[in-house]
Image (tube, rainbow, N blue to C red; front, top):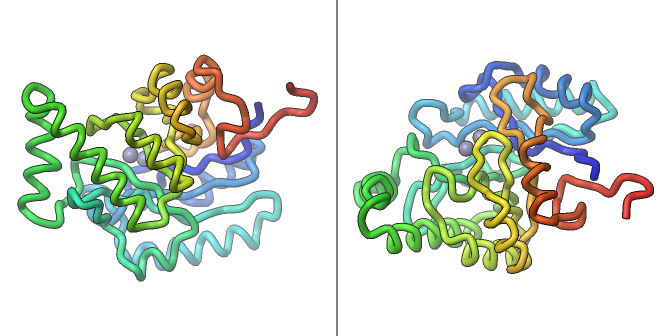
Length: 246
Ligand SMILES: [Zn+2]
Ligand SMILES: [Zn+2]
C-alpha cells in the first residue's frame, strides 16, 4: 500500500525541532501529498501552542499551500482531554482556525477542574495497580464524549499514556467516522488491538508523530503492525492501493 499523508507531526511551536516549512519539505521529499501540522493543544502546560501562535501558524500554512502546489498542508492540533466528560483544550475560536482535529491523552495537560485532575492524573497513575477497570472505563468514556462534542478526526496513540477499552472505543469511533491511530513512535496499538478494533468497524490512520523533520512520513513501524493485523488500504484513511495491488 501507498501512504500519501502524515496527519501527525510536531514543530517547534510545541516541542518538535523543526519549522512548519521543514516538515513540509521533508513530506514532499518522501512523496507525500498531504501533511498536517499538529502541535500539542494549549492546555499542555509544557508544550502547548498558544492561541496567538496558532494565528501565525495559520498564516504560515496558507503561505506554504500557495508556495507548494504538489502538497496540501493542513493545520491541526493534537488536543488534550481535560475533563472526564470529554472536554478538550480547544475553544470555538481555535477550532475555527483548524483543518483537522486530533485528540489524545497527555499527562502534562492542565485539567478543567481539580476533580478532573484527580481522575485524569492521579487515578490513571494509581490505576496501574488498583481499580484499573474503572479507570479504563472512565478514560474510554472521556474519549467517546470528546468525539460526540467535537469533530475529532483522529484519536492519537489510543492506549498509550491512559489505558482504554479498545473494543468500546473502536465501536464509537466507527459510528463517528473517527480514525484510530497506529502511531509509529508509541507502540501501544498492537496487532491484537488493531484486529479487535477492526472487528468493530473502526478505521485507522498511520501516524509518524514526528518531533524532528527527518521523521516526518516515517510510518514504517505502523505499517508493520497494520500489515500483520491484516489491514488493507481500505481500512486506513491515509493509504491507497498501489497500482496492480490486489
Ligand atoms: Zn501525543
Ligand atoms: Zn504527537
